[in-house]
Amino acid sequence: GWHAASGEYLTQADVEAVVHSYDLSNIPLEGIWIDLAYMAENMDFKVNTTSFPTLKNMTLDLQAAGQRVVVMVDSGLRSADPQNSYYSQAV
Image (cartoon, rainbow, N blue to C red):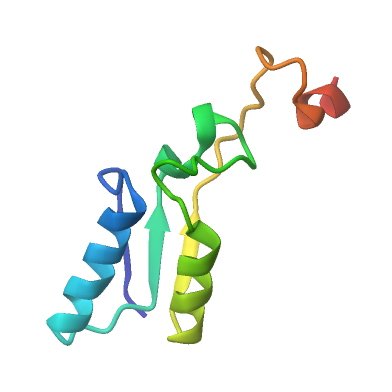
């Protein structure tokens, strides 16, 4: 099915508006891809809860509607955060 993706989805509201627009236009949407804006300080596995306050709930709602959410993951781990357990494990 059709997936939508853009680096311009900077907030959860942006994503929800795009999904709603597809629905209003009766265009089938199987999945939505979210670029790195959902990440807190560009750190893997950490969500920016200011821009994406209820990412989990939004994902569950879309899944219940038969749609998928795909979040992009940056391949790097931030070394500037000494408390980052993923970085520590990798070292």
